[in-house]
Image (tube, rainbow, N blue to C red; front, side, top):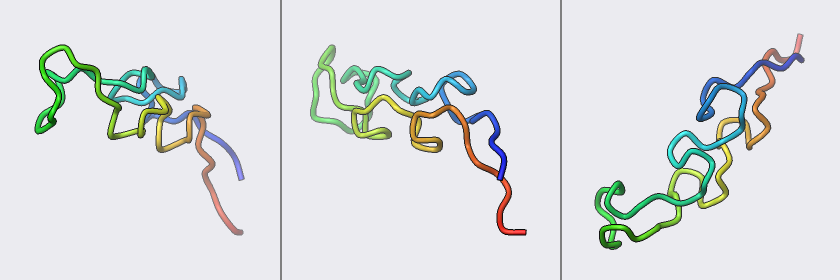
Length: 68
């Protein structure tokens, strides 16, 4: 199998979560339907606070191809 640049990352291939930009947290005012107030930092629901792209597990690359 070969690997390709992950296009789902914040910037293609950087391994960062596209929702929180690799920080692992989002501000309460930018998170709809959350209990946090304005300016509160909440754990990013997309990456569970890891800051890593979930598509490539933070590696920046995804494997393509399969059994031949």
